[in-house]
Length: 462
Ligand code: NAP
Ligand code: MG
Image 1 (cartoon, rainbow, N blue to C red):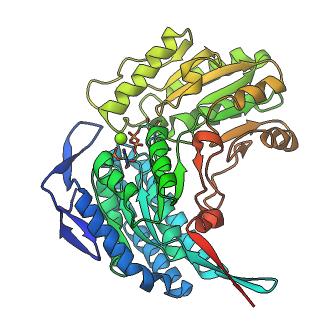
Image 2 (image 1 turned 135 degrees about the horizontal axis):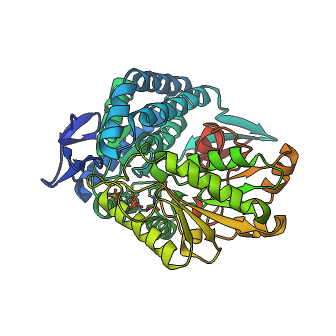
Image 3 (image 1 turned 90 degrees about the vertical axis):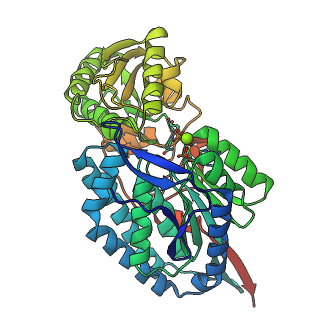
């Protein structure tokens, strides 16, 4: 893998302030595949200054020209999609087919949607005797995780560019090569110097410096609830805008009238996808008591088939964390019907696709985000109990409802405290607002709602 040993700041790769470097490791075999510089507070400051200097020019650039840069960016992502997929497979460990179909393809769809929105959005609107201007919020500090390395970057950078904001990105330390590739793509797309800047580095150093920098107007963070809480508190104290996309413990509610086999199979696939490292994964399956045993058998069978098809977790720490949760599930009395805490291979950060039955609401594995290939199946007596269990966590990011009749599923979904619900296996929509109720976050990403996060209004009265 090609790696830059500098930071992309003000339109060029520049020497980092310090000499510390981060090893990039392939979690499938433990090999070091590259090294990137560990940014310091000074690197962050240099990048924020560049973003601030570029703001007047970019925010005054006509939306049609911003749209043209986004189209060009989309085209570069298309042209380099194989390289992107290979890089993500190397540093995240996801199987190449999944990297191609999801990790490389989703950002193309999102970049495309913002090219169109930038060109068509009404940045000026008439309300009575006022003209309301939708103006960029300013300099954006974007902090992203490793689980969907490019998607999480594009879901912030594309709407910010469309809105006329300038950006400093601090990507996850585990997947910085994807971020460097993205910086190359931005450069190739002809985005002016300083509009997008990249500082690789560690969360508590570069990430924290970016979140706390007074020159940043909006902090957009995706990651753990623990870090998000701190970033939100710091932003509140500084009276600056913040967007937080945090964890989830989403419910897959299978109503008695549903096609049980389909609901269970799609549900298992949803959890095992990306080795369970998906914030919106349906990690709790809720099944009526009369169908419970059948659902458990189907899920165990489906999970067993995933044995060799899922990749490793991103690093040894996450592998240990997930195995710890599996041990906790056993200790708290849940019944293991597939997988378990033993590592399935000696090499690499693998965890077996794992399914727990007899999970009750009070168990840790029914409440906390595990972020691994682990499904908990819970039993309900009636619809009211299903709803209470579905809504019974601190999270509310996503979910699913299955029923024989679409209207029945919709009626249930409307009562769920969560930001997205897939009805009878509805497909991912890159234009639908994505974000959480309750402690799953603040704000929305993607589509029109994702764009408005990066805008503020100014009303002129006549
Ligand atoms: P994390 O530490 O919250 O990482 C997210 C991003 O925040 C990374 O870029 C990280 O940098 C940075 N960061 C860390 N500490 C920071 C600080 N004090 N100030 C500013 N930025 C900081 O998450 P993680 O440790 O990678 O994963 C832990 C758990 O978080 C997972 O098991 C999962 O439950 C959850 N998670 C959720 C999502 C999601 O999509 N909602 C994504 C990833 C993880 P470093 O990379 O250097 O740490
Ligand atoms: Mg971390």
